[in-house]
Amino acid sequence: MNRTEYLESLTEQIQNKHARQLVLKEITAHIEDQKQACLLEGKTEAEAEETAVREMGDPIETGSKLDKIHRPKKDIWMLGAMVVLTLVGIIMQSIICAGFGNEWIAGSYSSRTILFNLAGFGLMFAVYFADYRLLGKYILPVYGVYLVLAVLVRNMPHYEYGNYLLFCQTVHILFVPLFAAFCYAFRGEKGKGILKALGLLLFNILFLLFTGSYLSATMFLSVAACLITLCAAAWKGVFGGRRKRQTGVLIAFTVGVPLLLLADTLLFHGRILHLAEYQIMRIRVLLNPDAYGAGYQTLLVREQLSSASLFGGGSIGKAGELSGAWCDYVLICLASYFGLLIAIAVVAAVCAFLVRSLHIAFLQSNRLGFLLGVACSSILMLKTIIYVAMNFGIGPMIGIDMPFLTYGLHCTLLNFLFMGIILSVYRHTNLLPELKKEAPRYRLKLEKAGRS
Image (cartoon, rainbow, N blue to C red):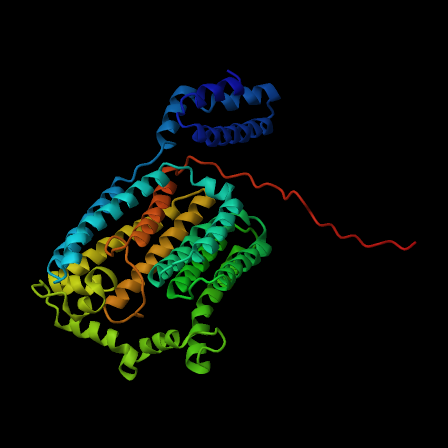
């Protein structure tokens, strides 16, 4: 059996068409390595080829073993955890809202949140079965559509302020996976690729702000997630070059940005970054909530937390009445109503889910899958950390959601979209080859003019 016949017999055992390409490339490399070793032993070209193929073993048996490895993966634990956590969130919130004293909330919350979560699961499964490489392949037209819709939807007539805030949050967060795909597009370009990624991040922020998008805490979270993704890309060696130096510089930059924000607030009253007065106040409240009137929410949450028991039996408290037990203060309401132990258990379950999501990203050999997994996991983790800190009186009081627990169509669809991307990445582990990097169609060439 020659090499061609061997490879045909072997790859016929591989069911997944994408996996066949990976296996073919891998086995061909092994045969070539073994052939070179045989040539060094003094064998002829034909003898070395025959020996290398023979030592690879039976093609049917080898192909069957490789087929078991290169199959779509199903993370039953993740899917089960999503269902359980969603049901827990719906049930707990329904119980709390039933006793809230508002008939509209009690009557509409359960039906609406069930519909929102069903729509989220539908979106998640659509993304789950899709080839995530499509985002990397068509990132430029996708980003173009993103910018156009960002402008068109923002300038629609009769746009209410509440919808405006939700829209701006959605726009900022949606950029995170797009940024991951751009980092992949800049692969192999070393420092130039990193500068392109940073330039794109700055352009996106300025474009959204100048076209009317809201300067919100969500924007800072999305920027933080993008910088984390950029650091991960450098650490993975996506850009090529000296990855340790690149990673160190980017980590220093990522840490330096919030320090600049803090210094600008404390020393220059937000003049450098042009922060609004209420944004400056929120940052100052974190350091000393007792000294500012705007810290009443933080103090209220701390007071309610101090009076919560381990096993519940209370009410939603003043924090729930202030901003809704289904929205900004879900955890503190759960702690008051069901007890601290239940609230901590729910937080631990969500955190375990998100840690598993990040672990999935680090399992990927495909660099696009790795970057998308890191990006989506990062934004979900950041939102959860800020939300938990806010509900326990140690974080900023901002409008943010927590996966599985908070109410709303926009945030539910976004969270399920990101979870669908993460599961799609896991499903295609060891299946999808890297996209081929296309050379630019046009190049600008500068030449020194000769003397006449």
